[in-house]
Image (tube, rainbow, N blue to C red; front, side, top):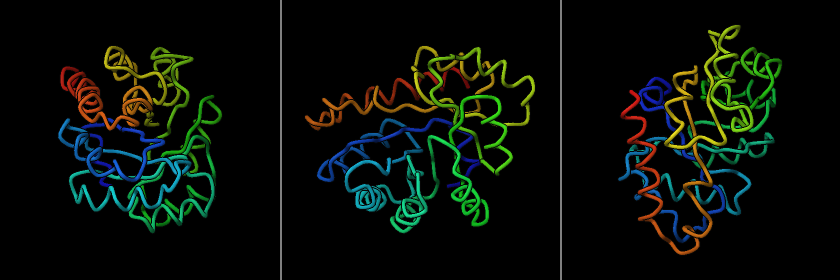
Length: 209
């Protein structure tokens, strides 16, 4: 993952619970909608195989990473499968240290000011503020007062309607997950609905940038 390129379109999709038989057309649909960065969570059944299939389908058209990486075993499996960046819901120092030493972009999760500082100090590429929805965009404005040099990724509760607020209040990037990769849409292989939902985020970002 080229972090500089990600910052040019700082929107991260979080895919959880997809089946292997839909992964290739699903990846194609989100690429066509304009998404450039996607994580597949490691607590999805068969996640390593999904990452491999997605990598084969997208080539270099998508930054593909692994999310919910909670152990060094998860990390090794994700990287062997082709993940180019790592995301966590919390700070796990061993994982961050390995990623920093090997120049792999890493996004540990945090919520409180103390947690955010510790994640940044450990070497986070960006700190994933999770779950953002319980504090909202104004929380980012408050955080950026003391932490103006820490880049923050908003995760949880971001919508096309409030995306602009998150960026204007200090978020460096935003993410979306279950609101776009809905279980019912995935179960029906409704790629058109997924694609339209992704495009709403991309269009909202275009109006903001």
